[in-house]
Length: 169
Image (cartoon, rainbow, N blue to C red; front, side):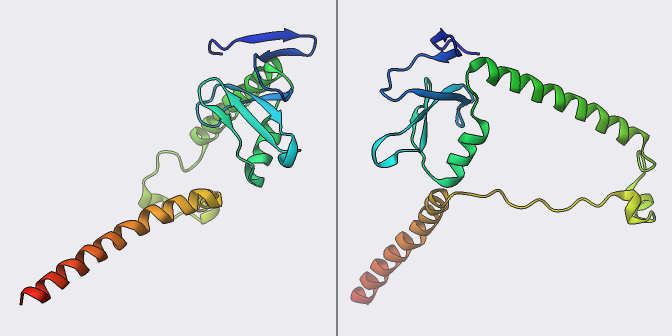
């Protein structure tokens, strides 16, 4: 954990915050991966969560995908967050070592592509294509707006140059 200011309470350890809304839990910041506090908004955004990170500031993204991601990854305090991360890390290590052992003991290990082509597809293990990651509408809009501005600019420049050439000729 980095050098964030924390406060220890009966319910666990939390980042120190000056927000008027109480801390509902903690999570890893989606941008910098540091501990961020989760708060529940009041007023017109009542019931929606937002994050406060010491490095990145406040993240008030309120899209359904982001809200689900916050709820699914939120922990009650820093200790439970770190315990969950340690358990996940151990699980990844166990899975990686068992996958490596399975790959080494496989009948297909060490064979060339031409040797694998002659095997039935059940033995080779066909890899399915992964779907593209989902982007929220705001990200799609930013990408679309950036890619559509260049052709417009070049079209305007071309139109001006064409008009000037037409007048000169």
